[in-house]
Length: 303
Image 1 (tube, rainbow, N blue to C red):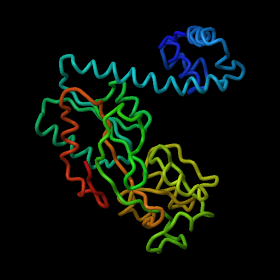
Image 2 (image 1 turned 90 degrees about the vertical axis):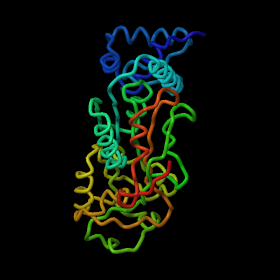
Image 3 (image 1 turned 30 degrees about the horizontal axis):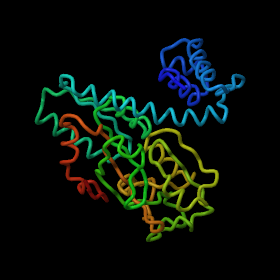
Image 4 (image 1 turned 45 degrees about the horizontal axis):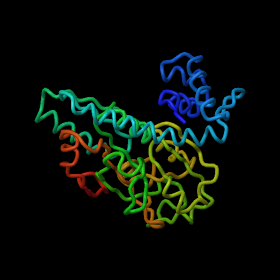
């Protein structure tokens, strides 16, 4: 059995985007070409992978897409690692999620510009998933990502050994509440005590997977904020639409909300730096890891 990388990319795009047209636009092919590539896979495997009307993967197609995501990511990493053996660039590119300890990134970039004023620096805001792909494909040199996890738990964004992942900072987790909330004056809160409380969930800002694994009950029918703007999330919480889990520094001095320390389960907000594993010294990595992270309120460093 032989599967073309191009065909796997086509299948993965169709499954992720739910459309042959959208997949074609994303990959730079015609819709007919994407359809032919998926059909080639189906002929090779002897079974349908995508239902056409409506467009949705079959169970076999969904499973193959999961495998394809891992395979293609590894191929992208390999290509990016080899590219680093070419002549070096006078540019540093970084991606960061909105809550990935932004002060660390700002100070790192300032240090880079002060020591290498000729260095071109570009930064972009992104999501965890997009940051992982950007590092793997070489679109950026490094990425800062974040999430809420157990105190000794990594973010688990990539397969073990695929990328280098270094903890940059941790911060206490708080439950953000509107000031008028009856629990706003509590010394600390347990998630189980908020089982019937409304929540505002913002996956583009912070991954709350660990909290959901520890206590799934409090997350019934949350308000979903699909943006990545912290100010908007705080407005939603402050308006009484629900509570939110955030790093302590994110709402420490904001009058719109009250941040009550999360006592149980014991979770932390973790920021990690993602880079390719081998290659030449990355000046951005050195600058980030040299920062005094405890200067961020409620944060501690660990490298």
